[in-house]
Image (tube, rainbow, N blue to C red; front, side, top):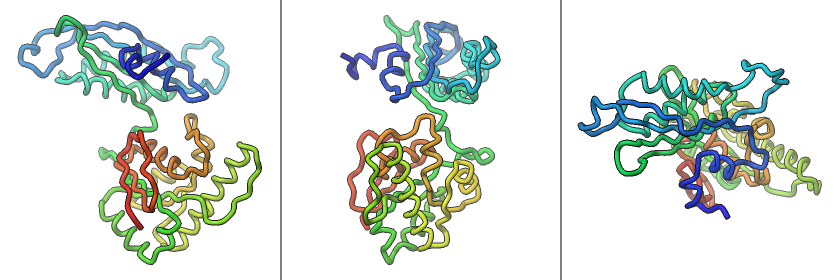
Length: 301
C-alpha cells in the first residue's frame, strides 16, 4: 500500500504516478544523473566541486499529431540534461532549492512540458545523500509583465456578498492591495436543470455559474466578465478587475478540476493555483478547503 512516508523516499517517478489525475499524462525521466558542481552556502564548500545527483520526471502533453518517429516532435532527454548544465553554468549558487527551482523553470519553458519533479542530492556532504525535491507545474508560473511577475488575488463572492449593499466597498478593498483581482462566483440561487448525465450536467452547472457572473457584472461596472486565459492575462497587465466565466478554461484544461462543476469554491481554488495567486479570499459564510497550495482567507459578509 502506498503511504505518504513511502512516497517521500520514493523516486520522483513513483510520486508522479501516485499524484496523477484520472487521465494521466505521458512521462519522461532522467535517473541518477551525476555531475560535479561548486555549490553550497558554507565557506568550506566554496571552491570545491562536489557531486550532485539529479532525478527528474517530466509530464508532457500528448503529441497533437503522429510522431512519425521524428525526434523534433518530442521533448528530448537532452533538453533535461541541457537545462541542468545551463543553470549550473549560469552562476554559482548557495542553495539546492534555488537550483531545483531554476531547472524546473527552464524545463517548463519547453512547449511539451506540463509538470516536472526535480530531486537533487549532494553525495559528498555526509555518510548519505542530502537533498531536496520539488514539484512545479506550468500553470503555476506567474504571468510576466516586463520584468514583474503578476500574482493576483482571487476572490470568491457568495450570492449574499453580490447582493450586499456594501459590494462596492468590498471591491474597493480588494483593489487597494495593488495586486490584480480576479473575481469568481458560485451557482445562482434557485433550481438548475438536472440531466442525470455527468458531462451534460457539468456544462449546465458551468453555464449557471456564468449567468451569476453577469449578475455580478451588472452590480458594478468594474466587473468585466472574461472567459479565456488570454483575456485574464491582458486584464492583469492593464490593472482591470475581471469576473471569471469558467466554462471554456475548465473544459479545455488538460489537467482541469475533477470535482463537480457546481463546487464553485473548488473551481476558484483551482484557478488560484493555476494563476499562482497570492491568496484566495472567500467572501461568505463557507468552510475553508483543506490541502490548498494557495493561502485561503475567509471573510464574512
